[in-house]
Image (cartoon, rainbow, N blue to C red; front, side):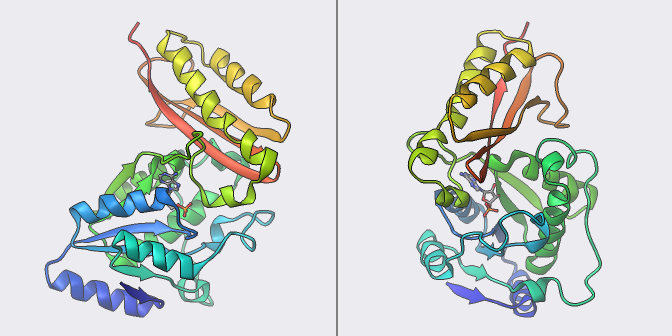
Length: 284
Ligand code: AMP
């Protein structure tokens, strides 16, 4: 496995690979890898000649009071995991290389980036789309791989790629979970003891929501109420949002019909966790 740590070298490598007629699959990450990231690598390996994993904790997607400085980092461990998963290139640029002095261009997807996490994290998706657009320009992938855990992120990136004719296949892979259902996340490292045990309520409440919808519940407010009541039983929890939206436009639904995205963000102590399920409602 090659480790490339400058934008210029990554661009040269990608140009060369493409000249040889080989395809590139890109897995963008912020590192501190877990099985969720590695499931994306596995999918990328199936359909591409070369798999590039970027590891970059993107400063511009963090709010001023968020965890940019404390975000877990361990390049040595990540390199080991990436190598054993079969990554061909780990791209590990510096923030200065990505955003040099005088950097001035940002990508903003309107609409989709507004609700859900966009509400409590203003500027977050602008940071995400900007860095992903840059990574697409640098790595020049044929396909890029994202996780359903970050459903809004995946929707926003798909829209960006489509609107800007990026000609990159955006693939979204299922959420990988711990044994108790908690979605794997680099931020789970912040959890311990009671908080870690409490965190399992997120997925449990989503499963309960799924059952209610499958049993025919059409009123999103009733389902949301049930989820919130379950989460509130855990002392360490504080709800940011629980929403039931149309998976296409991410707007709140008035009635549950067809597929809906049930999404939530909850603080467990100081750690903000997100999760979601897509549920296909019974036809009326
Ligand atoms: P991150 O390093 O958290 O920015 O995540 C990098 C990519 O991995 C994003 O596309 C995430 O959606 C995806 N990802 C993170 N956690 C999971 C998970 N538990 N299952 C599947 N994909 C995930």
